[in-house]
Length: 213
Image (cartoon, rainbow, N blue to C red; front, top):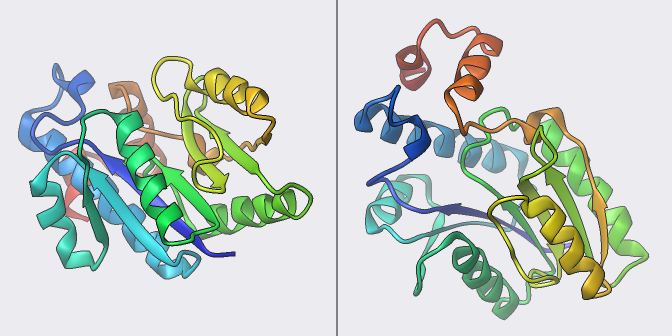
């Protein structure tokens, strides 16, 4: 199965605005870059993907990822849904069978979690020409990761309660969709409590220690 990893990264200019009150701009930018580097490293080590595609509104992001030999796509129109849509269309043009969409703020992703969910999705695809595996966030509301076969199997509807919206979209499109629970992939960094919890799990005493690691 030819599969790409797509990571939408809006911008380095005003990242993680919900952390404005507790982190400086420099710290927030460092956090976003550190998490992105981790995801890129893990996907490279896994050798599961034919391409890692970063879709962004920001040319600084494209310059940043050059050092990691990833492919970048500067989106034509703004917005997260637009970013994923344009990435999916690019994958479709290249005859990619499946697209693994992962947000850039999932710092606990590891090789084993990727192998497990991709194997799960492969079994789903065997019996369904069109299929989606959806990994929700810890609250079951957001869509932290999705594997879509084909890449544009359903319309993308990220935002508030996107998990339910993607389930509805698949139902309307008659596309088989399954929820997949993963501790590592459901853990994201959206609020300070998320960051604090992550640092404690990884035994970092400070954010700076994590950024320097």
